[in-house]
Image (cartoon, rainbow, N blue to C red; front, side, top):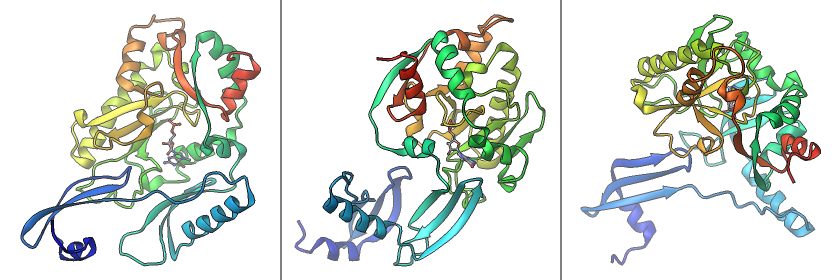
Length: 323
Ligand code: G7M
């Protein structure tokens, strides 16, 4: 082992190439040499050191100080805004060429937002068609329309219009494809970048989730599948077998949309079992459904997790649909 300190060795590190990197962690494996010998450096960003328990006075004060440091930016450059959401790149005091973080500001945030992001216990529930009819559908119908104002802003071309990669304006089989807010989108024009994350948002406002899909919606889903494949091929040179198309149930927003994610974006949490449903599976289930009457998607039971702070969990509780 070398006698030199880690700092001294790193100073001599001559970079050769990136072995791999992950945007979700984020971390990077770098290959290079130190004094003529191969060296690998793995750099992993450390989590914020903010105490979670803020009940007692001392812990709360510690958290307040830590948070002050986290949001003390020297520079904030806006990326986009839509309704109550804003996205920006930000730099902490030591100014570097690339930003330290990408941040989202939700303002004014509603109770629904607060409950969504709060750490909470989760439970597994089974949603039968009866539970859908008696608990879930009334819950969806009770949601204020303002919750999906950002979607309508996109469909009306009032926001994010310059980000649209594809548009089919047909009221029943049409949709838009554009980057999801998860992506910083600054990099959209660089050809070496694959689509980390796109969404297809349909024009038909009557489809709130996959539970509303019937056999007559097959042309819409097939249209989304074909066009998404074209868009990623044309814009990013990706083959259809390098992209995953899926739908969330439960979604965060009840206006039907399909997620289009490059396979290399492996760390994305929204891929979890019981939440992500492949578009191909939905197409198969609709193809196997009767021509008239409820589709298999309307007749089957879906199992998924719910946070105990989620409004839907409360609706289940009130209806005594869970213990
Ligand atoms: O879980 P669900 O399938 O409902 O996912 C909703 C998606 O919408 C998430 O991936 C969000 O990142 C994305 N999203 C949310 N908002 C508020 C916006 C927005 O204003 N613009 C865009 N482009 N995507 C959004």
